[in-house]
Length: 165
Image 1: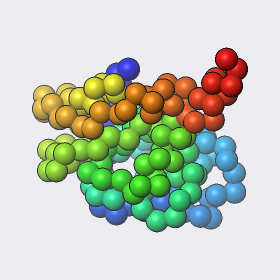
Image 2: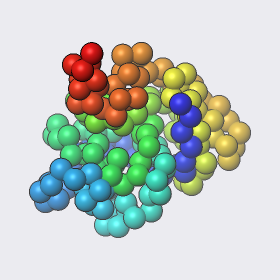
Image 3: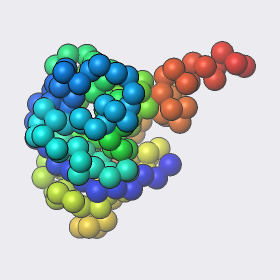
């Protein structure tokens, strides 16, 4: 699977309250949550996202509380994947469980990506190409069992498919 979109840059230690402030956690509707995506970082930030776009972050993306609403808000806003130098452990698993691909960038790679750069990622291989600068970056490869969860649309859908067999 190949994903393409524009890069939206954020810094280090973006916590789940920046991704989706708790005052908006009154629903589980992804589209509604997506309208408030990144409101804790900057009001209206999420309005810049177009379906398929990417977030490119520094270290420790998704730190803070272990709310599943944060990856749901990203998906609801149209984010197709997040690239970061590192992820908070619980957010990393919640992202995949909700169907959001997360890719770990090698050290220093984030600085080579510009705001608005057009990116392409081969989800299976983890090879990302910055189509603006023509630079290729090797991200982590996602293990096959997690690719199965992603291709199912998240853990709940994956389990439903497994139990129908």
